Length: 465
Image (tube, rainbow, N blue to C red; front, side, top):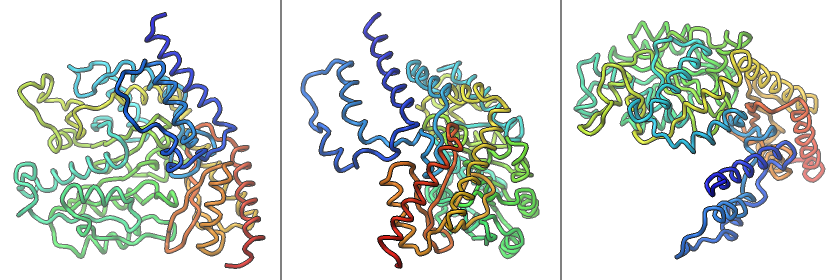
């Protein structure tokens, strides 16, 4: 075998060794960033180093700082663990090294995104003729979608925002829940609206938008360009907005409707959970992540639009040297901000091929069932479960904010599992997100036992705050 084959085989072997050990490995990193920084050789060398030696040095230097995020007991944030076929496809895709800008540059990348995007739309119940831009994640998807919405509502008002910018443009109303994800606000900052553009709508006790207040907020404003942001999957509680009712109200005001479905959009792929996103296909644009509930490697997200020409009109560009751009059908690069980007379609194709329709539904259902098991186990241990568990999110309190934070820290240091904290409705809470394809009932029970063990130890050390 030649040197390149040996090198790639060794890389795959090292990656497989890491992944195969995650089921029993401590979830926390062995060292923190400050310690790792002291250990790593920070001086650049004058002479070249053989590739094989570089690979071994890389693994030796950085393995102690790895967190077992792809493992079965990582419940912090909404992070999936890449499926075997998707991981293997990503290894091959790196070797192929395709730039997914258009079909001339890579016919394979173009067709992979076309097929995988079609499967995605079919699974979650979106229009078959919608455009799909493969972006980095929900931030990219929300930004692209709101840029598309900006293009549409201002064009309808007679303003060319791509040519003339926002100075002097009609004021655009942005109506969104108080429970919206922070990436909506950052997208508004990046797009020149600013966060003060948001007209906030109240949310119900579990974090879904209050439809009556949405009607009231929409009715208070002056007629004009309007964007309404709805949500499938509250980042804290998992709650889904009433998409059918919310969209119907928005339509009365000729508003563009965007659904932030970073993880909750996948509820549409499960017959038992699809009712939570009833009416989702009525919207104009949607954001979704692949590296969350679909369990593909980082990074991968989708900006989906019911109006492909509007989608392309807000982002596309051409130049004399760009063969393959500017045709009647939007190219890959017309739907995302980047020209030079990795071919994400290969891993999505592989994940959906591995799972199939039934496998995706089972993945969603299992994670939701395991989240409820988490809530039941902690509740049985006299821990307060704060939210209604409707998807894969659980919020719990250990009494005071200070005690909750101590237990979160203690659980992270224990290493059995990893969970983060959040502030919701003015309270510090432990946040449990179950998103990994490999998580089992045993993983949940083991994690619940560790959390209760840490809580009991804390109660002995600090009887009252």
